[in-house]
Amino acid sequence: MNALIPQEDNPLYAMSERERRQATVLIVDSEVAVRNSLRQALVSLGFDDITDAADSDTALEKMNERQFSHMIFEAKNTSSSAQDFLSHALEKSAALVAVASSYEPTADDVFGLLISGARGYVVKPFTSGALDEVLVWATKGDPVSDAILHTRNRNEALASLVLESLDRLASVMKQAGKFQTARFEVPKR
Image 1 (cartoon, rainbow, N blue to C red):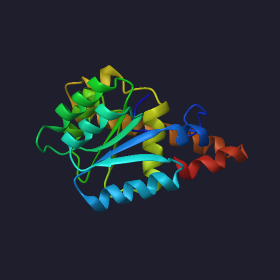
Image 2: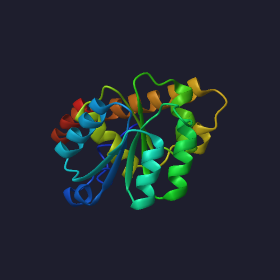
Image 3: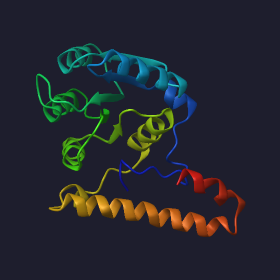
Image 4: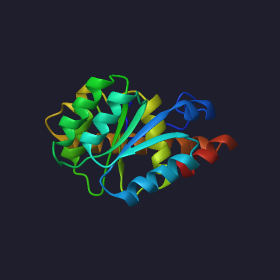
């Protein structure tokens, strides 16, 4: 359905240990502490091949040298806009799974990057669990529908996503009364 809401109940929305080891991740962030934190979280999640860059220019140079399957990038306008950087990165690798990150994103920031080709967004500071959910969903999940991405009222679209998530929670809670396996899903939802 979308890149922001993971669906743990669907086995397609999981990454195997092998998929994680085979992934090549490029971290692009101006803060050394954030790059290190992302690296540690990714290693704890089973990702082995991790490269980092302090800015978009360095990241694009690294992308000229090798292919990356995933990129977690700072959604911050520096020497070029975040959308321009994403566009250039996707030109180099159309299959790149790009996930933006920032401290206080606005709905317009998130939607703008999703329209430009980002597959997810993680808010700093992040937990390993949140990072894992976003990466798995961005990798395995369906892209956000064009109807939501190109809506005239972004707040309405965001509210629709939240309501859809609440609807899924209500369904799992109803099933939890009958099935033990559903009880394990309630905290995740």
